[in-house]
Image (cartoon, rainbow, N blue to C red; front, side, top):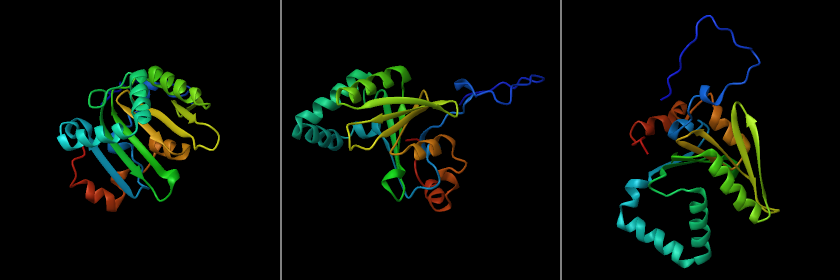
Length: 196
């Protein structure tokens, strides 16, 4: 966790935007807003050791060589390896398609990630735009006409948040109420391994 030093006697400009270093990290289950119905967390390192999971992943990719090529190319161009650079995933879903969130735990370089996603999206006729929101950069990846956009931002250098709507992403980055505040799901969380 980041440690912040409080500077006594210093007055900042009330309109001053928070610096990226001043933002609290948004990671793991703590990134999940309270208004969700389903949460699935997975430790990819542990799952990757399971022969059944490795075989199932290999079979899915073997059935679609184009999918396998796209996944491998995207992971390579982004410099990411599952189980090494991406160690855990949390998937949260609300009542509609616009309320889906993926939180990836790993090591992320924002410039590299934005560059490789931008290249992939523009090669297929789409575009990647960025906008500062609340001191963080929010990216909007718009595919070809008719495809829904995908929104993403870093919650910290160890946390990538990807959402089906800008509203869901912004809620995740700045939610006043988190999953632990959702009484029903919060009670279930006390029985789950939340380190994923």
